[in-house]
Image (cartoon, rainbow, N blue to C red; front, side, top):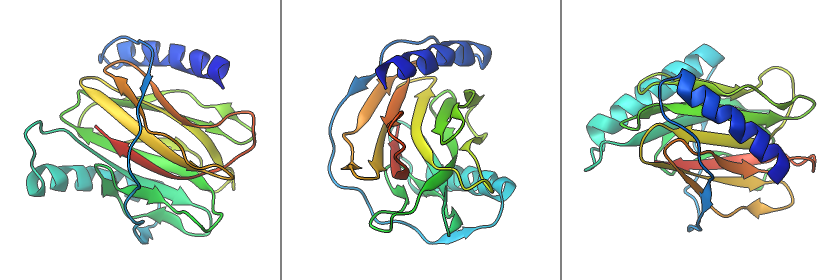
Length: 202
């Protein structure tokens, strides 16, 4: 996976520059405790998912203000479920213990200078990086094609971002963090293993 990560990470540098965010450096790793419980399905389309995560990140900034003003909200598209409701700031999106693949992820941020994300997808490989500023959603993965997300890369324009994935036959991986302009990668490539859930923090 490291060789693939480097090529995908190299694309992040270009994506961040195009998005007006920052430049790329190497990601770092850390560990964390167990995740929160999943949320029920409520979103019906990709456009609705984007609107849901945008509304969630705005609500989060108002109802859960913190000293930094940094928030990340995200919604997962899951096999047999579809789009789940948006979760924020370290809550779990996806499922565990049900052997269901995560197929897509919609992400929105505030207070972090924008976000870039990329997914490694079954039969496709690494997709192109997609980037958006604060208050705009990005989407990675696929819907309607029954393809598993196998890995996720994510970067932000300022501060840091952390990600943790629950992967088929592995369980929860260690949390991976990256500073501004760096890419945090979770999941696997070349092993045909589905991502089942993810946790994101900024």
